[in-house]
Image 1 (cartoon, rainbow, N blue to C red):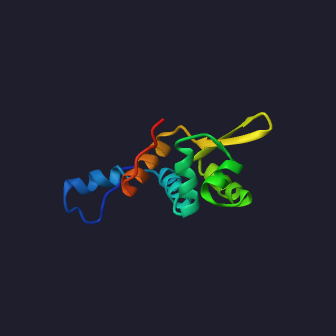
Image 2 (tube, rainbow, N blue to C red; image 1 turned 30 degrees about the vertical axis):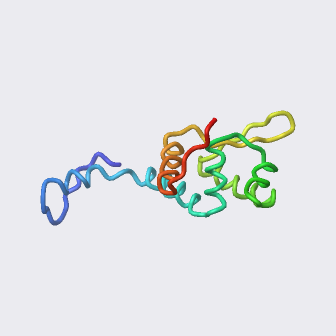
Length: 122
């Protein structure tokens, strides 16, 4: 957001100017929109939810979701590029989990609130 003061053409109230000055930057909005766009796909949403609760390999994610490994890999690539999922190698196997960021935590909780589901017991 720029430091330049924005003057609205129609000043209906002082609150209007305060809201305009608080509009998030275009970069911030793009990051949020990209994350939400990736979770707009049901398969990616299921994979993301799963990875919010555990670290898992492609083969196990595929088995858990009833998808093929290539399809899971494709979805993981998109989730990873959006910063929602991270990966790490353990031996020869690549494992994936939800990124440890504020947006991931908030999206995880929002998904569970909307779907009225609870995190599994550990």
